[in-house]
Image 1 (spheres, rainbow, N blue to C red):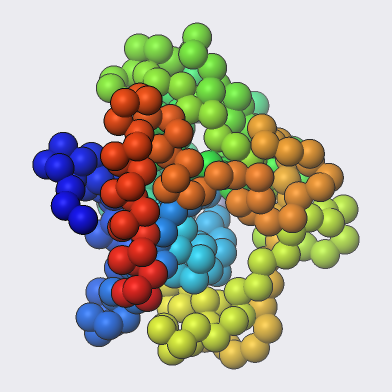
Image 2 (image 1 turned 180 degrees about the horizontal axis):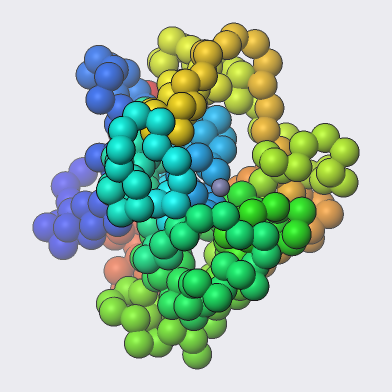
Length: 322
Ligand SMILES: [Zn+2]
């Protein structure tokens, strides 16, 4: 089947809408890299995780999503961890923020996720969200989060923090509050209309989850359980093991971790959904159309049939290659 030039340009645009380069690890052979990339090609699945600091992220979940489930995955750290301690050198403040930025990028190169930040500065410890918002201009940080959501276009957001005093650190509470508000604000055509380019266009995220990572058993959460201890034949280890190597990149925080074998799980609690009931959730993408054919339905009527045929041909090629 021959593709028209216009269709080909459209297909290339589709496949490069979000950066794929960071999804392929630098360590594997070409066979491994191609195998991991193939998992992402038959559909469009995107997840954005949001937390306050370098090390808040659930690395095992990032690895299971990005490497195992073929999900384009990103971590949005509101700060660069500028306010913490430095185990490996004299740098503090902005200098430490630069080091931790590099540590996050090294971690993402392993677990396969992309990395985003806002302009929020880590000023050190605080006890409440109010203290955090005394340092962080709330609308400005919210605008930065909305801009990432509208340009990355995830169907699912996972907020590490719930936005309550149980989160502890004031920046954690503020991070949860902002993630909850961003779910609404990103979809509201009346808000943040002055952001540049695609960031001005509303984007309705289908589902918002809270991570159970720091709340653990007995937190009242009876939501989804994701298996992260599964051995992946392409990686030669489990997602948890890969994630512990990713975790060990946080050297300024002395976070070296053993890559232990065995069952591991992580938990998620659905708190908002535009595609189904909160209490009937069966999976992260349950109720979300992640198929390429679903994209065609949103195209102009005269273009849809030809592009639909091209996508079907492309899907067959991906299946054969897999
Ligand atoms: Zn933190």
